[in-house]
Length: 76
Image 1 (cartoon, one colour):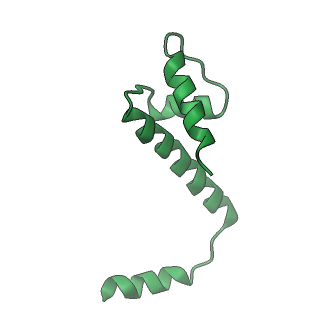
Image 2 (cartoon, one colour):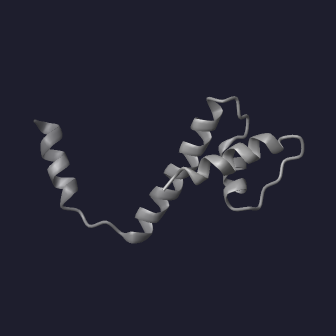
Image 3 (cartoon, helix red, strand yellow):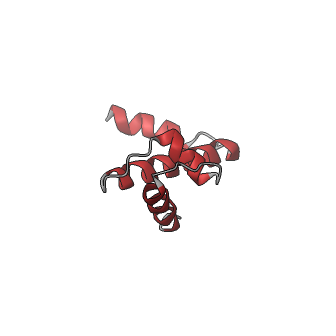
């Protein structure tokens, strides 16, 4: 019952749009990381962030980059 009480309190808190955006971006980063890691992708979260922001290129790991890019197309 304690969990339900705390959950109710959280439901009443305002959501700051900037925080919501940051939470979504962080979730997107980690979904991309872990879902492609299952397939053997060895890019680290900071490297995936660079790929997401179109700033990263890692020679010899083009397949991993491509996998992340394609995986991002599946995310909302």
